[in-house]
Image (cartoon, rainbow, N blue to C red; front, side):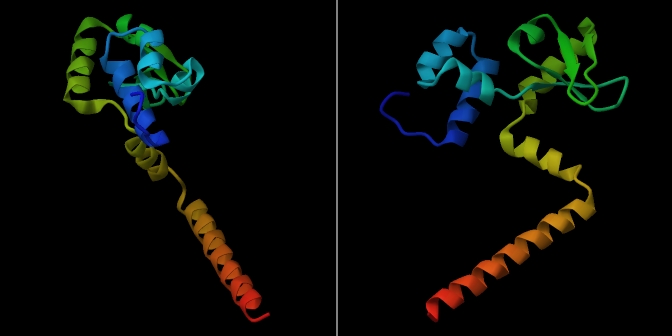
Length: 144
C-alpha cells in the first residue's frame, strides 16, 4: 500500500478484510498496510460467529483468528465464551462466506438501533441547540 494515501476508514476496512480473510501473519499484514501492530489490533473488529448467546441472546463473535480457528466464540454483551460444535461451526462458516463479517457502518447501525429514543432526542436537541448558538455567535461577530 506504499505510495497510496488511504483514509482511516479505508485502512480499517482493508485491515479487517485482510485480517479475517488472508492467511498472512500479523507482521506481514502490518507491513502490507504500512501501519503499526497496535493500530492493526485497534482497528480489528470481532467477526460475527452466526450464532446467538444462550445466556443473553446477543450475537456471538470471534474475537481473533485464533478463536475462530479453535471455534471459540465470545459474547460481547455478557462475556460468555463457548466452543462451537461442528454443525454450528459449519453454519457460521457458510454465513461468513456469504459476507456476514462486520463493517464499521453495519456495526454502527446495529449499535444505534439499540439506543433509547429518549437519548436520541436529548442528543438531537443538544445538537440543534449547538447549531443555533453557533449561528447566533457568527451573526454577532459579523455585525461587530
